[in-house]
Length: 260
Image 1: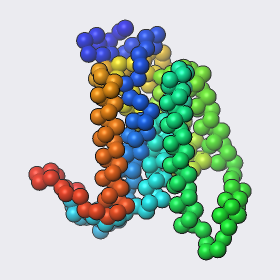
Image 2: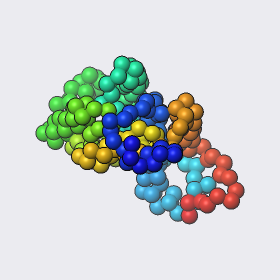
Image 3: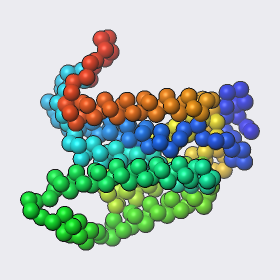
């Protein structure tokens, strides 16, 4: 292995491989937390009154429950997309469980969005049929491109094409065509996955089509590192929900800088 030898690696051959130190559920949680945090910042910047106030004093709700769930679902989906290339039975089982949880989250987000969008007395099934019929060539092209990205990642092996900057841009472009409002949170979730995987000892082909893998080797203990990152991501999601959806003003430690 080329590169660092004491604490990990920087550039390495892809012939060597180790078990990932970050599990699928952690990738989902981090992707969701990053996407929701970005949504809160965007909502704050879009409101001149909120943008001029200090971060510590912001307590008004700025996201609806449907928007929160949509951001979280898109970020979680982006956080899982790179691992559609997994091949081992253990990883495949974990991936199926993670996607099942994601489908449930998406279904809840869609239900809340539909409940808010439905005119009084309209049949939900009729509403779904009406909007499904509005799919145009852009949406179809976006879906086909996203499927192609996943297929190319599967064909190139784990931590190959799907873990590259090219795949990140392609996934963003595909989602931009299919669901423009979710393209940024999905891309942020995707980027968070690549950033986390860079920290462990298994190289990924971030600069595909170059054959050299990249890793930093900073994470040494799978259970401890994964649990810590998962806990921090869930805490960030909880705080974002409390302040962004419920409008609860969270305590701000003295001495830390404020927004203004």
